[in-house]
Length: 265
Image (cartoon, rainbow, N blue to C red; front, side, top):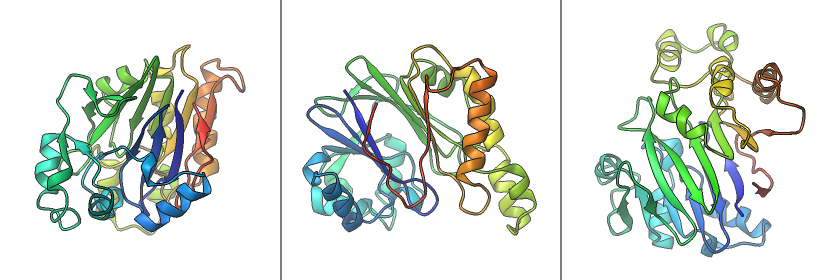
């Protein structure tokens, strides 16, 4: 059995925790360590719940507190060799990442904790490199793919095998184009290596939809160019159009700066 909590999802900070029977993996570290301690205590947990950390990429909203976690917890930090080389020089991590470094091997299952094996796949985003994760616990497969300018065949293939998919639904196109962002930022978001729109997320859903999918969580919503209602309605419409009956798949929006409940997957 897996359990999952999102502590925050969005440009304000990204951090979540996936729990197995005996160990837990924190995914990204863009939220303050004291805040995470408080959130863990609210769940009757403590830092011992974090057996390892996975890092998707080296943007600040995903690694802002990684150095603090390395210093305080000294748990293994798993990511690709390319990203680890970047983290060795990043101001958020360079003092503390070295002793915690664990490189994920490409194309194979990496035993990250006693409960979890991990494979990564690369997604298009304007970071040094950006990873999606396929995380296996027993017979269950959890797939996370965030901060991607467009979906890839590999990402969709992993999602088509998963019991839980966490996928980016970052912006509503009309809100973005009609909003106050400068044109250069609008182009950065929309031109293939930025973020995934509500429409693009909805278009992806029927491509990975399969009978074993139990949970679909929408992540990394923009605070300026989206609303939870718009993202949810777009994904729900895609599920309905694909013939999915109400309630057969748990659809949830992971919010900015607000923890989700502890969800049994």
